[in-house]
Every structure is written in structure tokens, then in C-alpha cells.
Image 1 (spheres, one colour):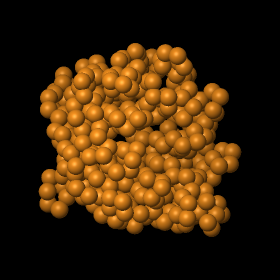
Image 2 (cartoon, helix red, strand yellow; image 1 turned 30 degrees about the vertical axis):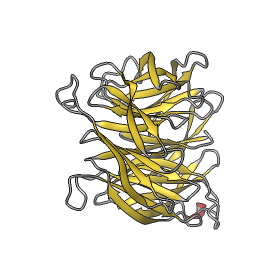
Image 3 (cartoon, one colour; image 1 turned 45 degrees about the horizontal axis):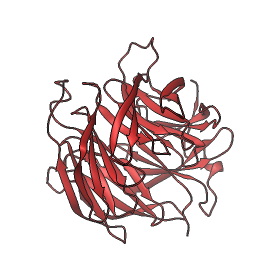
Image 4 (cartoon, rainbow, N blue to C red; image 1 turned 120 degrees about the vertical axis):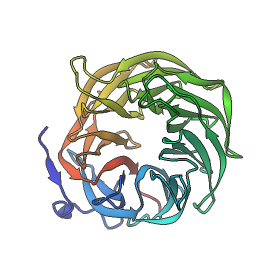
Length: 381
């Protein structure tokens, strides 16, 4: 794929409207020599679409995953660091977004209660953040105060156990936290256990209680990473990092149980190189699913059967770079942006809502070590 590189200077003529009304894109990064935190972009919705760099939104240490509360103009991030204030824990930060400039200002940072936090989820009431701590294999619930500041942890659960891969599964590795549409059940993909742990969630108290059944399993050595529900809530999909597969589950919203209906590869049959699965998302229309491959450096595209929830691979899109750790899907389902961690760039694509196929831009936008992409609609003043 031959594409141009769009830099801030090259995009100066395409600056956003003065009132900041265009769709914004926030990018979390691994910080270092080139990166300082969360960066923001404006999405130009022409044919093809493109991202316009707007610079640093806020300084923050390795904001590896982002979440937003649009009503309160809040941005949340996990700080994937080995320690915070001398303690062996990562951090979770809350920021206030300026609806005009898109800049963010830090409200506060609190401990994530575990090492290597890599994912967070805001519950439907906006009162709690669920945090997945990868290195220590734990999950925490942190209260979000009415003013957006983060409070104390209201719950903490340490996973235990292991699985078959001696190098990567000697202990638990919680990789993602997901809530069902009713906000009643929480699901923690644990790569180290080859399980999706299931908890009943008390939104009022911010508490997790092991469900019965307590988990759903994937094939030993598969390594479940991220999870996404179909919009109607009848099916859920898990990308397995180590096996480069997607597992489809039928979901019983009354009991919180997951029943496997299919597992299939995210890779073409003739691919023989090293690969690991990363991000997964379901299109808002419920007809298509996307899954990223690190190694193949692509996004696989699947059609979802409306009645059975099963998947059929209908194509793939080159990521335009190396190591697509994450991609963002805008709420309208019109655009998808792929973050290439190791090549330091992002490819934005239009989405054909009839076929689900991606229509890539002719320009890549530079971003230092991008690892999370979040689309944010214009905020009300």
C-alpha cells in the first residue's frame, strides 16, 4: 500500500473550524523520547477522509487506553507504568475536556491497584471505572465522583491460576473489562487463564460478585484479549491474542452466561509468519466485525450472521504500517482509524455500510507510538 504521510505543517490548510465542531480523535501513546501523552486530531470527512494533527492534548505517562464521558466532558486513561509514587501499581487518570479547543486538563490520578493497567471501562451510570491490570492479573473498580475526579477503589479482585503456555501463562493477566448492555454483568478477559471471568456488577455500590457460571473458557493457549458485544446484546466476540482467532459466544442476559458457537482464524490460510491478535469491534449496525493482526499488519473483516451470530471472513485491509495494536470505530459507523504502534502512524478508513469493507485514505498521519484511538463527537458547550 503506497500512502503519503500527513504532518501538522502539511495539514495547516485543513485546520478545523474555529468552533471545534468537527469530530475529534484522541490517541493514547506509550510515552518516551518522542511521545508526551494524549494527542488529538480532527477528522476531515471528505472522500477519502483524513486526520488533521492538532498536537498534544495533555501530557500523561503512557496513557495506553482511553475512555470518555461525553455528558461531563471527561476523558479517562490508564497509565501503564510499573509503579506510581514509589508503589508497585499503575495509575488511572481523569481529565476535563475543553469543548472548544479539545485540550484536556488533569483532574487527578489514582493507583490502579495493580501492575500494568491496560484497559478500562466506564459503567453506564458514569459512577465507576472498571480497570484491568495485566501484569498482576487483577481487576479494580474505582469510583468517579460527580465532578469527574477519581475517588477510592470500591472493589478489587485478584485472579489466580495459569494455563498451558509456560512463557506467557504462568499466572493471570487480566487484559480487558467489558460490561453488558444492561450494566448487570462484567466480563474480564484473562489472557493468562484462557478464561473470560464473569461477575455480577452492582452499579450503586461499585461491587463485583463472582457469577454462576463464573467464567467461559477458550481453547488452551488461545489467550483471550479483548471483547465486544453485538448491539442487540445477543452475541459477544472475543479476540484471542496468542492463537490469532475470534471466538463467538451466544449471550444469555438473564444468567450472564456465554456459550461458544464458533472459533475461526483472523488470518488467511496461506499466512505462515508470526502474528498476534489485538483489537476487536462490532459495527454499530451489528452486521460486521473487525479484528486487527499484529504481524500480518492488517484488519480482518467479518460478516455476522443475523440469526446465529456466526462469522464469515469477507476480506482484510492493510494497516498501512507496523503493529496495529488498536483501532477506533466512530459511533456513527462511518470511519475506522488504525493505530500502528511500531511505525508511528495512523491510517483512517471510510466504511461501506452496505458491505462492511474499508476504504483507506491515501495519507497516513504521524503519531508517536500510538496504542489507542478514541473518536469523540463535538461536545456541547
